[in-house]
Amino acid sequence: MQWLINTATDPAFNLALEEYYLTGIEAGHPGIAILWQNEPTVVLGRFQNARSEVNVEFAEKHGIRIARRITGGGAVYHDLGTLNYTFIHSLAKDGAIPMFRDAGRPVAHALRDLGLPVYFSGRNDMLLSGRKVAGVAHCRKGRRYLHHGCLLVNSDLDRLGQVLRVDPEKYLSKGAPSVRSRVGNLADSFGRGAETALTVDLVREAIMSRVAGEFAAPSEADIEAVRALRQSKYGSREWVFGSSPPFTERKTKRFAWGKLEAFFAVRQGRIESARLYGDFFADGEAAPADDAPSPDIAALERALAGVDYADDAVRAALQAFSLERLFAGCDAGEVLAFLLPGGA
Image (cartoon, rainbow, N blue to C red):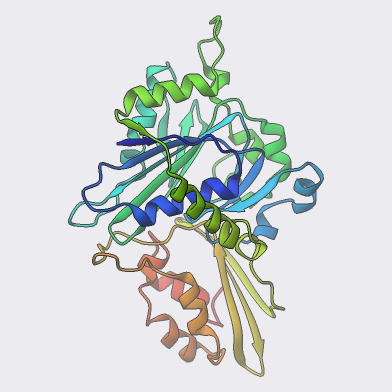
């Protein structure tokens, strides 16, 4: 791997940096690894509804940024006590996406080197002593693959619990009454009685010792391109919050593979606009052709616009898409049944 030096703490810049290198890495490249931090920020999953997931008023009052990444999954809280890692590389010829535990193995091994016996559980959680200490996510663009995660080293967990509005079903189903009770800092389990406290720098050194590679700094041209992407996309309110037309129909359900919310603006029996939100991941195991676009939720939303709000018409629009790839891990039949006007 090639280690990319990045000391920025602006979330919009850091997320733009990820996308820039994901789209630019060429076949045969040894891969890119980045360790980075953000100032206090809530980072939304690609498909989440910002106003449902974040206490926006609290965030604004306390100077907490709100950003959106290109990977699916749920919202996470970052501050300078959080260490984020990113691995970007080309996929093998079969195009198969690694399992989360395989993609994150170097990080898990590094934490175990520090005496922290972490393990993966559920869809995308890294746990320690039953508490979530990291969330991981991924996406691909053609045969390019990005895996990243955020490690809670010594983050402000009270602030995390105050700013995130987490679906209570997500945690009650796991036997925990709140997000605050389910998460933990790595530092809390580090060498009890040890003279040295666990810091972000110690975790950074442990990961870098597990992932060999040369160091490289972005060129001035790279930095300018990332800044342009930050300005046009990641720093825009449209990307973070999206548009909010007046919806007349709303339904929501939590599946084993994630939560799905469907909003429809229906007028005179026809769908004028549709929005699909959730903490699901897009792109299943099917291998795309070189540079094939990843499944696009926005394309599905556009396809529903203008369709009669009736079972037969909505079913026909939905069946034109590979629902298994749009909602990774789903059963296409259950998604179809849920999204039909008569579904629940």
